[in-house]
Length: 309
Ligand SMILES: Cc1cc2nc3c(=O)[nH]c(=O)nc-3n(C[C@H](O)[C@H](O)[C@H](O)COP(=O)(O)OP(=O)(O)OC[C@H]3O[C@@H](n4cnc5c(N)ncnc54)[C@H](O)[C@@H]3O)c2cc1C
Image 1 (cartoon, helix red, strand yellow):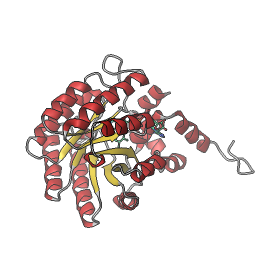
Image 2 (tube, rainbow, N blue to C red; image 1 turned 60 degrees about the vertical axis):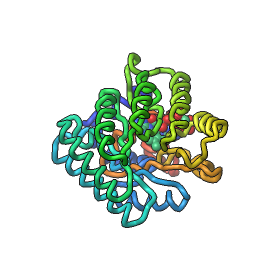
Image 3 (tube, helix red, strand yellow; image 1 turned 30 degrees about the horizontal axis):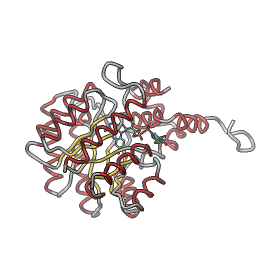
Image 4 (cartoon, rainbow, N blue to C red; image 1 turned 90 degrees about the horizontal axis):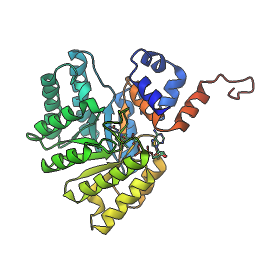
């Protein structure tokens, strides 16, 4: 099921049907703050009121022309302006294929540098999301290149990839801030752990490399076992709770987000918004079978008594 949904998430012909379907739009609103920047700002205000930080993601990936890449870059600069104007405690997350990585690497770098420079001028920070393994090396390289000039940029490491420990060591040597996650894409067995227990074990091992580094990292997971391992390791090694942050996705385990804040941890909520929500939505469905059941139940027509059939 996971593989099937992840394959569908890359299907550009299916996207318009899902995006324009009323039921999918309703279900997607659980994971996506809305289609406009105003929607994302309202969500970020709510997150800040709950004493959490935010990261805003203008949804979009694999743009097909330069105009699309330039428009995404302009969108990101506008987000930073709005964050500053509303005095929100928020940064942004973006994808390099949204800035044209597939089209022209120089264009992508120029646009990324423009965004990071703008973020720097406002005292803010850019997180480069990690995409499928076809992009890992280019994302690491681009992060290192841009980080050599601006410190306000970091990236994401995926615990399911065999190569990640080496990447983490490399990026730590460059002083880079990282977000650690398990990984959300369909990967072949020659590059990634297939078993959840192996991914989890690697996640814990990588967390133990990141936390003592003295660099501020994000531990991104909804998995109570990963969270407990992080809390235990931080306590046993005298790492204060303000030296790292937990990160979770909008609409997922809100209870856990609030609990961590009550316990005194920093929590950042990743808030996606925009019209191009299809691949993000499909990845969230793929992560949990119950999400698919919920989606399918909503798709079924209602009976005369209002019951789903
Ligand atoms: C802030 C943040 C940023 C991320 N950025 C990236 C990125 O740049 N690149 C990338 O490849 N991946 C990214 N991810 C996704 C990540 O790789 C995982 O796919 C996702 O977080 C699920 O893994 P998990 O750690 O929550 O553990 P899992 O073992 O998958 O889940 C643990 C528990 O969390 C809950 N849960 C997890 N996912 C869902 C869901 N979709 N719906 C409902 N409940 C759920 C369930 O209760 C589940 O039992 C990001 C995740 C977060 C939190």
